[in-house]
Length: 287
Image 1 (tube, rainbow, N blue to C red):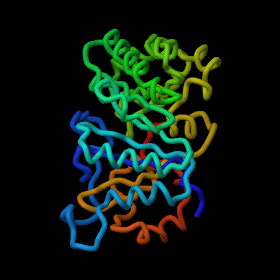
Image 2: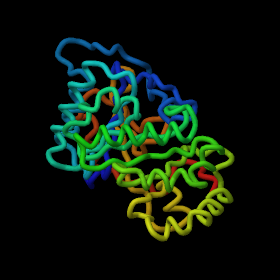
Image 3: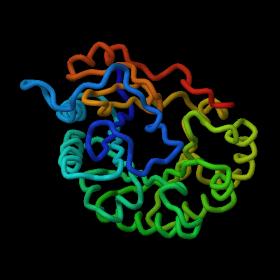
Image 4: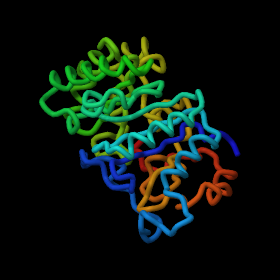
């Protein structure tokens, strides 16, 4: 089995694959569907809870980075599993992706991770660009007591927010104390406005910033880099997450439908033995 690259695991408050409490209308998690019929979360005596298999995966699988997404609300069981997942990373890079509200409410959740990926968009941070920037800055400062790196993941969720980012907010985020890097994240699949013409115009307007910071402190979405600029292929972002009482494996974290669903890690071995990054992006990227 080749390395899984960045292995993603998504945790929600109830650990059953339910939607995040924020409910962003564009989120790829909201589009996820089970492969088969749902099964009860508490199965027969003698079978492991799905979270135990996720913990085993973090400890046993071959990957370069563990990326754990924390959806709201955060409950006691999630805290325990998060600690055990991070311990299983065994010194490899481990990142937590969550909202500024989660970080400000409970910064100690980050303890044991090496990086915070801070999700930034108007749905999570309403109130205008100034309020958004201030909240991101506060969350980054709070995170510094627990992680060595903070990356702002700015999602191009609406034409208005995309314009704000390109028009100056992106540079302000990069200049914010405590922010080490910013990643421009496009929706999957992208909305109509986020087409080839949009990206060519955005890249032209951002040219001075890209000349200084591209792949240093400013990162472009995987499909833009690979398909428009030709500077890399799929970075391999497989995902292993709870799904209605089982565990779903996706070769691409953004895919709605899982490749397989399993109850134990052993059932996943044949899929992992044949794993390789997708040869092409599974979405119509409008490029």
